[in-house]
Image (tube, rainbow, N blue to C red; front, side, top):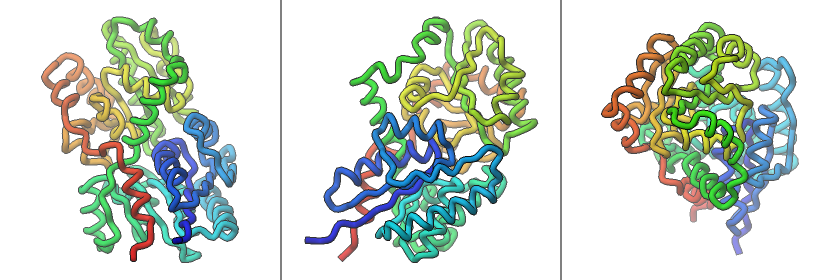
Length: 375
C-alpha cells in the first residue's frame, strides 16, 4: 500500500481560508492524504469566522497578529514560526494560496527545507509591483520557486509561461473560490439561520436596489479611501439605492468611512461579515463596488456586475470577459460608472450575463490529484 502523503496547508487571512477550505475538506476526505493545517492568524477575528463555519480546526495556531505590526516584523515572525512547524511536521508538501505575507513566509520556509510547495491561485499579475502592495511581489516571488503552480485560468497560466516557469509544473485548475461559494450557498440553504443576520437591513431597504461595498486595499489608504467614501455618499443620495458596507477593522478604513458616511439614511455601515453573510450580501446586491480581489471572482458567479476601485487588477480575466470594470478611485468616475449600471438596463445585463471565467466549482479535486506522486 502506498504511504499517505502528508500535506501541510498554511494560511493566515480570511480570503486564504475561504479559498483553501475546499482543498482542506477534499484532503480530509481522501485516503491518499494525511492533512495538517497551520494558521498564522495574520487576520484573527475574520479568519476565525471562516474556520468556525467551515469546520476547519488548525493543528498549529501561531496567532502572530499584533497591533501596529510592520510588514517586516510580521514577515520575520511568520518565517521563523512556520519554520518551526515544518521542522516538527516534516510534510511531503506545503500548500499555500495567493499572495499574503503568510504565503511568502510559508513558501520560503518550505523552500529553505527543500519541501515542495504547491501554490494555489498562481500566476495572477497586475504588472505593477505597488498595485496591489505588497501582494504583487509576494505572489511573483513564490512563483519563482514553487514546485506546483495551480493557475486559476489560462491567462494566469500564460503569465507564468512568460516568466519561464516550467510548463510541466503549471496546471489550470479553476479558482477554489467558486468551490467555496457553492459550498456555503448549499450549506446556507440547509441551515438558513447561519445567514439570517441581514434580514433587518433587507426589510429596511425593501424596494431599493442594494449596492454592496467592500474596500480595504492598502494601496488605497489615504486619498483613495477618502475618494471612495465620497463616491459612496453621492451614490447613496439616490432615493432608489441603498448601500450595505461591511467596514474592515483596519483603522485606515474605518476612520474614513465613519467620518464620511455615518448617519446617512441610505448607508448601512456594518461590522465585517462572516462568510455565509457575505455570500448573502452578494446574492441580494444589485452590483458590487470593491477593491477586493476575491469579490471580482465571487460576484460574477452570482451574476452580479463588479466595479473595481483600483487602478490595476491582477484578475484581468473578469475585465476581458465583461463581468468586471476597472474604475479606479476617482470619485466622479466611480459615481458615473455606478449610475450607468443603475440607469442603463442593457449595460447592466451585458455585465450580469457575461460568462464567469474563474471556475466551475471542482477546482479542489483537481488540485489534490496533482499532489499524488507520479509513477
